[in-house]
Amino acid sequence: MHPVFADTILVGARVITMNPRQPRAEAVAIRGGRIVAVGDATTLMELRGPGTRVDDLHGACITPGLIDAHMHPIQGIELAVGVDFGGVRDPEVFLAMLRAEAGRVADGASGGWVRGWNVDYDVFSTLPMTAAAIDAATSPAPAFLMCFDGHTALANTEALRRSGITGARSFGDTSEIVVDEHGAPTGCLREDSAFDLVLRTAPEYTRDETLERVRGILGGLSASGITGGCIMDGNPGTLDLLAELDGTAGAGRAGGLATAGARPAASADDEPVSGLPVRIVSAMAHNPGYDEERTQRYLAQRDRRGSRWRGGLVKLFNDGVIDTGTGWLYEPDTHGDGNASFWADPDEFERVVARYAEAGFQIATHAIGDRAIGTTIDAYLKAGAQSRRGAPHRIEHLELLADRDLTRLAQYGITASVQPLHMQWRKADGSDFWAERLGPERAALGWRVRDMIDAGAPVALGSDWPVAQTDARIGLAWARLRREPGNPDAPVFEPDQVLTPYEALQGYTVWAAQAQGDHDLGVIAPGYRADLVVWEDSPLDVSADDLLNLPVRTTIVDGQPLYAASAA
Image 1 (cartoon, one colour):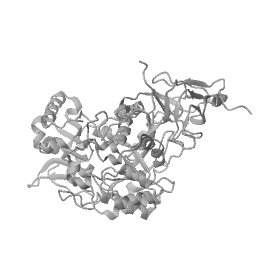
Image 2 (tube, helix red, strand yellow; image 1 turned 180 degrees about the vertical axis):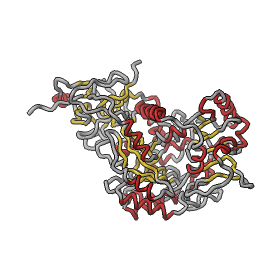
Image 3 (tube, one colour; image 1 turned 30 degrees about the vertical axis):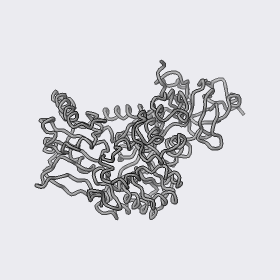
Image 4 (cartoon, helix red, strand yellow; image 1 turned 135 degrees about the vertical axis):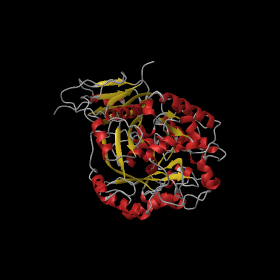
């Protein structure tokens, strides 16, 4: 029998395995895209053959590849268009940026539309959130601006005219065209069904442009150590796009770690290399009112997959956001809002959950308010808390969680997919839109990640891009600090909820993998996929404030170095 040699052996490293049976090591051996051995360099060098590459990492740190448990890299390219208003809270600065963009598009740029995203609700503390308030800055061009959370948009008068919006409409969900006392549209559009009316009239990307932009977004994830992600939106067309991106891009075996952007040389017996730079699980979004024909088409997609992507996940909404009163609460917010499910018929939500669960799908539900979370748990328990494939059903966001439902999450193993970095829009005095609507007592229960972990509930962490930054180091830092990284004087929100460095890393590695039902990711152990990050230093040892500046040397997927930092 011929000896089996490794393709690559990484030595001279500090390996954080996330494997409690072997927490630390100094070397990793890889063959055929999987880890074959973990341990000391002397032992692993026995796997060295004539074609094995040995890379000495000179004390660098290796962790499992990071997984962003909640992101929108495809839908995001439709929404994250134009001016990025991140960090802008002054209405005058906001209007000045709109005027500058209107001047730019007057020359034909952006199809003549003024577009912007990442708008902070704080801009509208003094400026009315109306078309009239932005008309002077944007006319005669149509304008469409998306708030940071992706749940509320503002259109100017010309955009409303082109979209044929003249008053209120009824939708099958809680989407709303906000109107004034005379029934005229104000320009404020809440939730997808309302603002999609405007988006359908705006210029769209071509197929090639879409592919190129998605490649760019996914390719950029590697710079912060991300090797996989869970897409929380989509339809069969999204799966088509992933299949196209995943098409073979040549062949190759894991090579050295020195050259940025280089693909290893091919050999005759190599497997095809995926065109996807990260591993993707993609949901399809089922919204209220979908007919039987569309439902059947979605159900038929369950088993679609490629070399680095797969479906089998359905995404539902059970409420909107607390900031605008569309989060579903057990008790109304301070404005008297928060009384409604996202579904005009809440029983339809339970029927849809049961339908997809019976078909073997894993289910992820957007639920921010406490009642949305509670009724989602109810629906899962009626349908079976785990999918037939053994993957736990999930709840996304869980910004306000009641004690009664915290206990049930843990009891039934329902995953809490949380984004602590969303706290960046909160204010110390509670005057932000989110906290003001909840009041101080309920706001103090926000993002109870520590409580979830202590109760034994499964937890996964992510960004929700384009709502928040894709850089996983920012997400890790917020989970550990619950304040703005790099600013020790910033307010700490609920300090009793901070995570340890190890727990935060678990949330982006082994726990995120388990949330997807993947039991060969997120851990460095024999038999697991060789999705790895090589860090300049250990992310467990540097302070959370310094995490943002911790260099990622190399990001490896299937044993292939798909990102390497440029040499100084």
